[in-house]
Length: 279
Image (tube, rainbow, N blue to C red; front, side):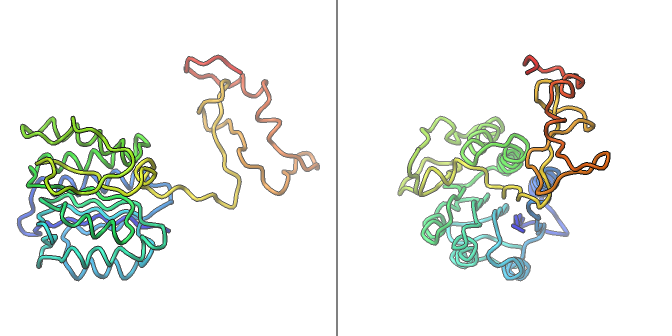
């Protein structure tokens, strides 16, 4: 199972409100959206030791790594010490090599200098900053990004743009919401627009997909709810989307339920309020 690691540099005795809110917001969003296709590893008080343990435990199965807290151009400031950005990049390399890692988010000040190393080691997409960022804006950006991905099924690019607009609402400084969006390549520049979050990638395909692991097909048939127009409705009425390799017994005979559940008689018995006519 793929892993999503969310790590926060916060102090257990004197926690920062914005970091605590981002921590709780992202964790709650991921858990609410999870249907068994990934697991969330949460470190509310990140240290070099517990982050190393997480990387060692999950190996090449990491899909998303999100960090929030104080940071610098070459390091992330964990609770106990500064964590070297190059070390972080190489810890994530096995997941990138396996094709499982989809996104790294470094939601701290001036983390853009770490992007080159991450992209060079095969990380498909990185979100980082080019300057100091406001705590409130950072919290809004982080929580909104995951809500956009989990609740609105947005791609990385779409979720980034929407989260940046939400963060701009809380900031008087220009965050770059009006900057032209690159389509094919976006690498850190020598003099990036400041201050702003940047979405960096080598290919457009990397950011035109969801970062969350897709739900794996189960060994049993996938069932989808049906209405008289084919839209979701009451749990009583189901359409079998993937037929099983066997039939179901009914009155002593084996038969599939597909023709029964997709017949017009069964469909028309389920009411709905959507504007589409019944098919």
